[in-house]
Length: 531
Image (cartoon, rainbow, N blue to C red; front, top):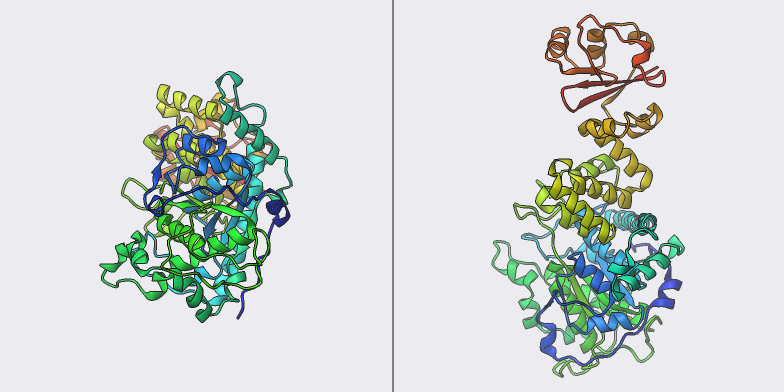
């Protein structure tokens, strides 16, 4: 069954902004060793990414000059192995958004074709095969997520417009990036990113055509040397031919996007280094069809290669940039716990769970994650870091991190609700310092669908004993437990400690006539909604 096309969002803008790229001489060996981040860069986007720690390596240092010349196409790929992206994908998406904000043309490629195989990079075993219908559904869902994330990013960045810089502290790169970003956040969100599906070109290529073109110029010795392959050769199950050839499919993606969409830079996690090099090698070794020019579809899906023994072309104008892989203290990939990913889809992971995931970031990682995952300006991140050094118990970086990531993924209203719920449940002292609890309508919105919000008849609350009410609302299992809690000074009604076991719930204890806030201990809240 053929896959339906996912379409393209903003192809017109991409074609207007994308460029063929500058041609620079490079030796073959220069593609084999990464150029580590470190020195101050010559272009604003790489400068911004390096300050945030988002550059692990680049294929050649000339990429910086290339990016500073003119806007170009930059792509990252996402295989639809699930119906949602997860926070492990987020760092690559954030980096791609930074390229867009700097004036480049982002392409998010969903692997409707490659998703049926699975990338072996960073894996110790082969993925389970997915059926066609599942891949089609996953592809459509991820396409919607990517489009939404870029639109949300514009709104997230717009909050810092004209408030995030001090001219005396800006260098020319910071200023250029800020000006480009301020223009991008005002652009039509419908053209913020081009989302493509690689099934749209792979389904037209036969196996024999692929072997005769891509296979003929690909060296097995080079493929075997890729880390994603080497790490699997000694594994008990080895590596299948299907996974072994994955790097060729991803290489062809880069070539196709380079020829037809003006893409000159591929980005990905550090585990994608070998796949990115495969794409660069294929572009250099496999000339385009005579009718193909960048941003103009070719008449055939593949071209006849030149002599495969000939050295690569010296007209090298494509590049790769890798992003650090974020891992936990135990070495697991970031965002996964016991095999369960922290999804970006709200039906798979409630937004409050995403918020709390980042809210619980260890102190040692908080400032680094602020640079990684948020678009907060440098001055704000540095201020939050100083606050944390002065008063670690306030967890200022963690609170900002959780809010900003939730704002990016789920939007401002959801982020506001998650922040209120988190502070009400776990940081009530902050609400007290800020002037007390917000209105009942705001709290109800924050707790919509939360099991801690219970609905009870008004007649079973007003004028009834506190002990009876807390048992009815599930705060305590029985009357004796409720009385013991009061004796220990651990029960609060409407923010006031209950001192008397015979106390009753009064009208003045209820917010706006319909909301009763109950707390046991330090952080255990129940919201009783009176009906």
